Length: 246
Image (tube, rainbow, N blue to C red; front, side, top):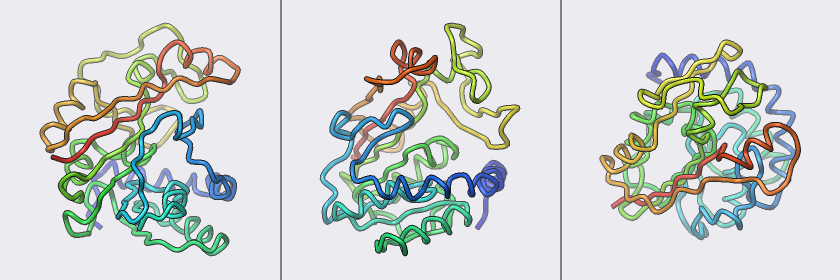
């Protein structure tokens, strides 16, 4: 693979985190209901996904591939793509344990070695949508999708990123970084590289890649406790983007 500098850095970071995610993989794979994000909001409440039965679906940045597993159980022909071999090892172990088989490909979502116009749906839940450069992975998603294909991805809320402190510290009412110029984010407590765009830049990027935006779901948790929950009840900490290739 020809990896960008940040993709190589993220691969190393996620290799170190792989044992932690392996511990949670069985719980996620055991879950029957599709849920989204930190707050595990049911898909029935967000209505982000189309009927996937019989469709070709690619998950960009699949990690341990629990999203892919949920979609495969609903009749999709799934390909999970991830840049980290250790994460894919966990995904394959889960496939064997749960008797579920679908394609897993070691690759960066910024450069997927698959033919164009091969998929009906591309999805990313805190995978490529966060840890790949949107100026690389969004055009790649557009290339992989057939005309009329759908793109669904979950990211941190824009306001959240402006107010976020270091990891494990909830945001508060203070804006800590400028809105204009949002793109690459790095944290003192984390070796990974994240990417977040302002809404206007994301809208322009999707438009330039021949996507029509069909929805932007600003997620609000309905139950929970603690400072992070209280913040997310006032401002969106997560956003789901829904788009269709023209």
